Length: 98
Image (cartoon, rainbow, N blue to C red; front, side, top):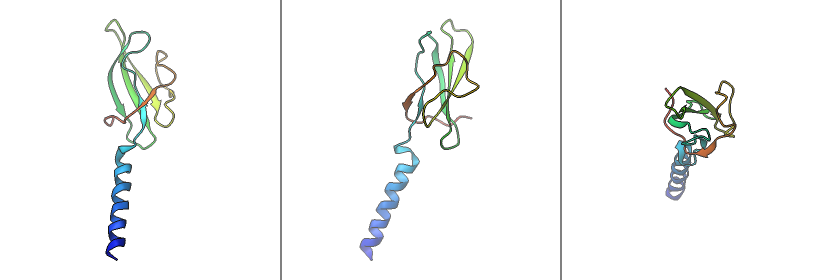
C-alpha cells in the first residue's frame, strides 16, 4: 500500500510539473524583423492554446505595430499588421498579456 501511494504521488507530481509549463511551447517573437523593426514587448494570451502578442517599433523609432500568432502552429492571426511575418518561431511562453 505504501508503495502504491508513493508511486501515485510521484506520477501526480510529474504530471503537475509538465502541466505548469515545463514543456510549454508558444509562438516566439523575433527580436528584429527584416525591415529593421525591433521587438519592444511580447506576451502570451490567457487561454490555453491562445496567442502570442508581439509589439514592434519601426526602425526609425516611429510607429509601433502588433503581430498576433497562434500558439499551436505559430501562424499569423487576423488583426495583425501587414508588416508582420506570416509565421513566428517557437519558444517558451512569456508573461501573460494584460
